[in-house]
Image 1 (cartoon, helix red, strand yellow):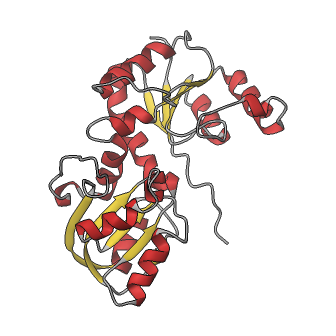
Image 2: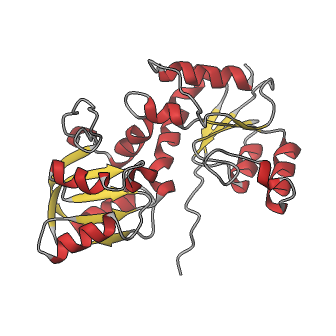
Length: 276
């Protein structure tokens, strides 16, 4: 099976009722006609992920996020950039093609990235009944969980353990009792074009704690901080973009071998940060 054939099967599997326009699900590097010997799935095709893929004998990486440092994987501005040149040289030396699987993952029903983190946290049985999507994204928000009562601190420790993190950031009171928890993965916590959406989501569904990826400190963190200081039951656990979305790519490695007919291995891209 070729790289393009694997990509086509992934798109077909998403089973969308419409064709995505201007999708970022593209061949980010390599040869679409290359015969695939093995596949690595990962949040991002970092230099270390590329090296690990080569050591595993894989010549295709299916990545969720960009390879070339911008949302559209535009390379026009990188022609003489030393990082781009060395990374392309690395990929060429190993004969690895990179295909990005992002939009179709999120538009599939259910969203495979949310399914991944739900499974990793072990919360399938606690997910609230899904509400049909409406034109108002906040009011039709679906991914929240009714957990046995706990505290923000205990919840944060559970998240750290399950998502293999040394640190998380919280806003609010660590000893606050909570049970209804929401998740906004990746850029979802920025509002997906509507910066008010995360706050409206918390209010619309009575969410005590939001676990989120990216944040801007004067939007959702400020809202939760004020709510907490005013004595309201609100808190935030910030885990970052990568830790919130990596698990969909881990889950993919369990079903992709049957579809592609070659060995598939998940490689954790890991957080880009070092904590001092």
